[in-house]
Length: 485
Image 1 (cartoon, rainbow, N blue to C red):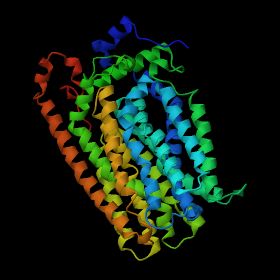
Image 2: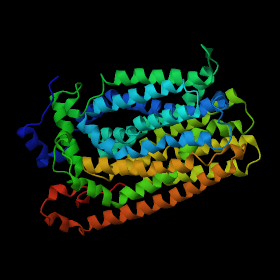
Image 3: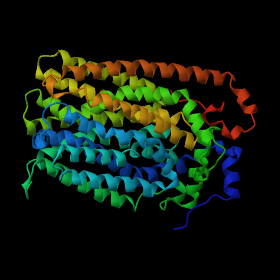
Image 4: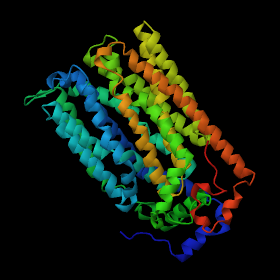
């Protein structure tokens, strides 16, 4: 298949002033094609990613802890934690490789590799084996989230990103619902000496491997390499990204961008990089602990294994629909921060209900508020970071930093729900509550900072940057660039 490469005529056309006139009909057609040919694969990637990292929680109450003799102390929490060590370390280098190694090959390779690891987790017979598998799982899953966000940014404009981020990220709460249903069935299988919990890993891992192999044949590397676009659509895909850059990049096509240490320095010195990092850090404390320990939390309310698995489904389904709704609304109003603030308030209410309520029905209702408040916040932070870092390599490095710092929260989230605190888990609920309060405060602080910076640009107080030698390297610091609140 011949790759579409913009020639001089295309580049001249892409930089003409009449580019301000947007071809809405072509634009809609382009988005529709991207939505059909790209989003289903990204949705599947994140669905299997969350299922395969979180199914250890389902396996735990299906007999894994007893069979591997990790029912006491913090051994199970250690098995959860080690996943995040390689997961954190590979983020930035992996993001830099997404385009260099071709996204349509690199991402499916990661999927297939972690699917194999998940499959073989069913064979482990010791705590050491479980730890090794969790380390490998984190190694291969570590580049996925940042890679998917960068991949989306190659195809969609800034204020089309959040809806698409929500459309793939809603797979996270759906994985909790689907995983609970699936685990309740798989945990009944007893074949060939492997009883109950191994089949959760065998089946879910094998399905991931098949999905990863299929992705090799359908995921394009960039818009210019998309077989489902004609030349007119490929040309417009380049032009609209140039318009959306608002001066942050002098390069027309994402294929032509080259890595420079200058871009890394810009990402490292951007205040919004660290605002988003710390906001997401505190948001992920309840998100990760909720995803991993919800079956245990519900079992602590007095429900047995299968019933507890099934009771994880409704709150996760509520979160699924909330992510879709808030993502759509966020792109419509071009705002991210206030959705994070609103979600934090709901999550805070949910944890208070689980802490103080005596009635199981009220405590269970609290899990709904936590789910719908916390899950919708992650795509908001991802979209916020992606919207406010430019061009491509600044975004790649910045998002890698954001994910790396944010995922350090796993060192907290995996150790706040301890077996000794069951069935009420007051420590875990209290820490998660405090983390959401900090999320709320920091989100408001970033909104104030970005609004202050935009007003300075509106008043022309950043126009002196246009006098520097290379205007094409201003990135998101360009006076014409406006931050998304």
